[in-house]
Image (cartoon, rainbow, N blue to C red; front, side):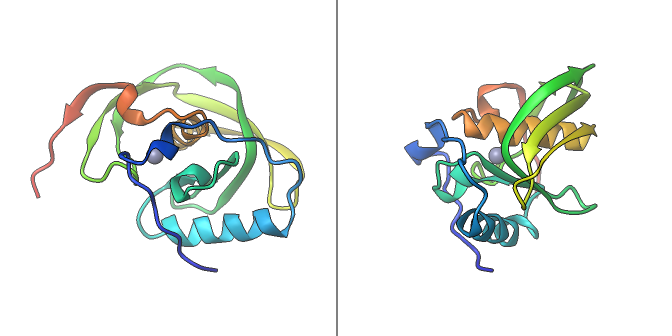
Length: 151
Ligand code: ZN
């Protein structure tokens, strides 16, 4: 596995729409492994576009295990939450975002098998945040209020 470079919001690639994956092959698995290596110590999720690859591929780990999502779609949501988010492509920026409290995602896994998973709280936010990236949307577009942290 290898770490890749995370692109930041000045890069216009982040505004492009990612293309669906036709087949989960070794190239996609290497991408997933590299993306996990790139984000595991610094964040809770990463979309392929953030390493410059316009494919609908996402890795999430909110601290209880790796979740690989290929061609993910949100198929159901419930409730709402307003919490602070940040993004590895927008270092130093944080703000409140309104998201569903629960989100159910349908996707292909590391082996190309379809599955569905429901996330609540942080996991629901991660699903929504990363899938937004696949459509060229940044969390900054949805912030209701920016937050300053003192370091
Ligand atoms: Zn992000």
